[in-house]
Length: 116
Image (tube, rainbow, N blue to C red; front, side):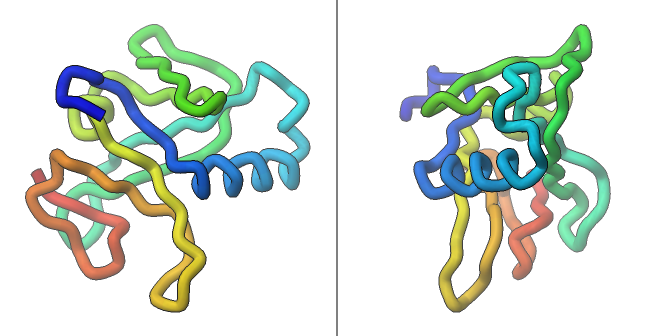
């Protein structure tokens, strides 16, 4: 990964979990569905991450693919998420998705919000 990539990445572990969740949601066989990631106001540090499955792109959406997973985010969110990697942890210290965001100047203890 280099600073000129200007994309959003997904780790192997996060990819496996996304595929499991898409299977559970019944959308794994529908190629129109993708993972939407975004940044919204809120959380202890001012900005929070949001993820969902979606099947409709909007005019200003940025579309990426990493390891066969289609990832979409709006342009405003991408300014905060450029070169971020979505990861998944199932360890004892916390379970769930988290964002390894090189743009965040600080993040809160829960890892769900950040500041730039």
